[in-house]
Length: 156
Image (cartoon, rainbow, N blue to C red; front, side):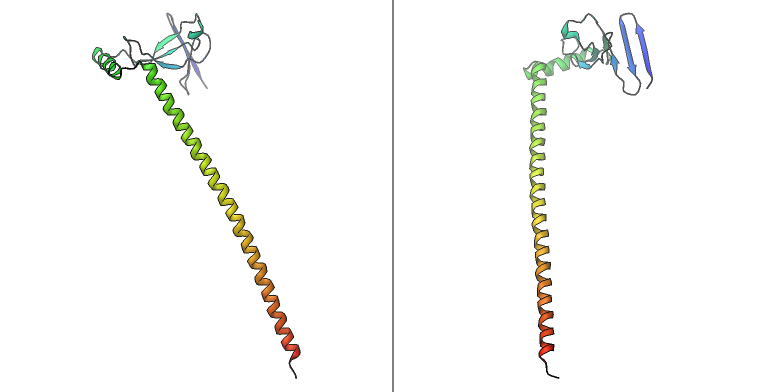
């Protein structure tokens, strides 16, 4: 995989061409985040992964061009209309994701139980077929034995 290094003033990024990853000055992958400030709501950027730990890296790069004043106004109106800060909205989305994961896990468990029941039923049917085969074999032998006995008892 080929990597390129770009440097200009205070911005630095190393990007893997195949994956489009960005790396900060610390050398760590720089996650893509979304700004929810009043001046740049909804605008995506790459920043140092350790900025919350007090890193002095200061790596920062915008993904999106600056939105028009009208677009920023609409986004802020939508956010204000919800009467919830964006972090609450994100928490709600996380809750939805966790509920979906729980529902999927429940569905998987239900399907596993159904498969287990079907395996038991299959074994029961197999046992029934084997017993039926044995009974038919015994019956046929018994019938053949009676025929031989009748032939033996017949007078010439």
